[in-house]
Length: 102
Image: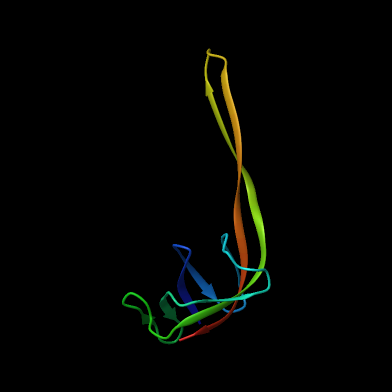
């Protein structure tokens, strides 16, 4: 059984007992979160929401918060002596999907 869930403005395909990396969520590590914006539930019989499936919930546990890999931004103008280097690390949250209820 799988589901398509909207989390923090993005859509993810989730299955039970899998891990998922999403944008940073305001939750404490070890806490349980319920997502009720379930757009589709698949498996033997597919349920498509209009726009969401009524009564469907996905529960997940927050495993950890972290940072992604560094993205380097480098700007240069040739023959002008201009070079600018900047780095950025994206914040993310690791979730473990506990259950999908239709």
